[in-house]
Amino acid sequence: METAVNKSTRRYVSLRVQIWITFILIFTPVFIASYYWFYQYTSDRVFQTISEKVEDTISGAVQGMDVDSFVQLYQDENTSNPICSPSTGDAEGYYPEDSRYVAHVEWLRTVQQIASSAAPDDPSNIRIYTYVGGPEPGDVVGIGSTGYFRSPKGGFEFCELYNSQGKTQIADGLNRRVDRWDIYDDSFGSWITTYQPITDQNGQNVGAIGVDMPASYVNQVKRSILVSGAIAFIVSYVFIFLLVYWFSGQLTRPIVGLAGVAEDIGEGNYDQEWSISKGEKIQDEIDTLTTVFRSMVEKVAEREKTLRERVTQLEIMVDRSKLESQVSEIVDSDFFQDLKSKVNDMRSRFKDEPTEKKPKSDEE
Image (cartoon, rainbow, N blue to C red; front, side, top):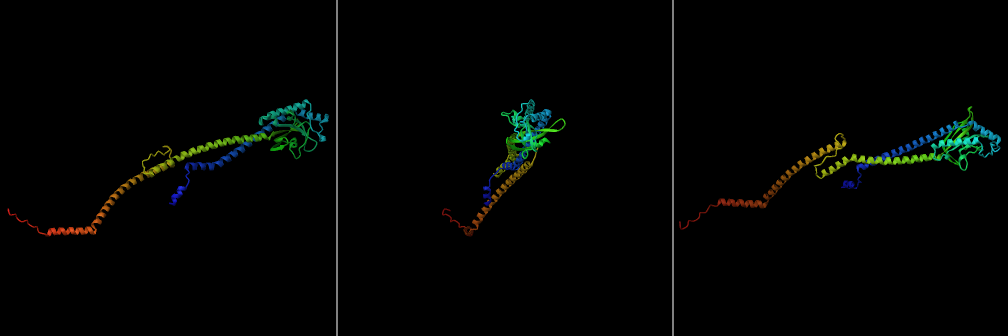
């Protein structure tokens, strides 16, 4: 009774659902780990592509620059224009009305437009500027900037003095290539930056160029990858698990069929349609189980038939035994024995008495 109660209180969960849930529990962490790896790998590749594009852009900018005009412009302004006096430490910068300056910043804008193919639609988000060394360590003096074309004008102004010590690596760009791919913040926003020296025909470093790529674009690309990857992940996740659910149904269908057949056989219906096999060319454990089960059912049916025949014979024998027992009880009873004794006495008496002859009539 206790076993029956325990079985009745157990929750029924189909084998199909168990397979499906097991697959989810096993493969969901795998999917998440795969998605995380894909996101990291794709983000790194995109970031690498952006950085390579910036490197190519800054290298092309240096190669296409009129270096002699760049050097001569600063020398002339520094010599003849008292406003350009970075040595005093109070130069704030300005925009000289010189065709060489305009040509220089025009070239920077061209570079900016080329670089915009690796950045947001608004090319002004990219900052490109040139500079030369200042009077003190860490000092740089601005030459040109794409901020000249903004409204209002901005960016690194000509002859503007900037001390980079403890702030940026801009001064290091005067001597070597500097790539700062870790995102940093300043008063204008968040950026990734690269610097490269400008060399003259003699191979001497005469200045440097810097390109600031807005970190917002990098973050935008990462968000785009995250959203696109998440959508693809969810769609593929749902599709795969629907496929697993369908496949688990195909896998458990023969077992469910066998369970139905077993239930009918339990009701005594041994005449079944054995259409559980999935095919004739491919055999598996389900087909083996079906064959064994069918053989077992046939043997059980035959044994039940034999048992029924034996039970019928036993019933006949039991009926005869009951009849003999009842007769024996009657025969062995005192009443029957007394009655039998009286009958025997009567028979004996009839045998012992002579037969009396009838008297002849007078007429004879």
